Image (cartoon, rainbow, N blue to C red; front, side):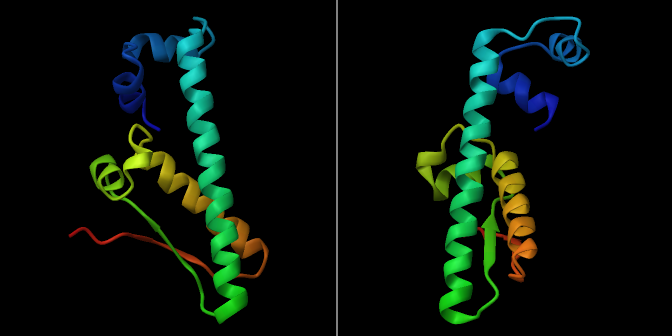
Length: 116
């Protein structure tokens, strides 16, 4: 996630983020909690994608396609339960899921979901 996205999500100013990344400022508990939530969301997305794609591969021998989103707006419109999770987190989770599948010799790919 970019520093700009973190600024939007946390109401924390960019210079403070840079100082925290450099170890010159402690990260506030509310920011740590938010980052933990995003990590948990990413882990759930990744595991779910791997599970579903593995099932598709085993049942149909069809290379699975993992769909992701170009923007937060696209993600939240398609999956309202994901509101607040940046599309960047979703994209990274799908990229990691694809790597996990490749390690299991499942030829998956990641594509952007077409917008309507």
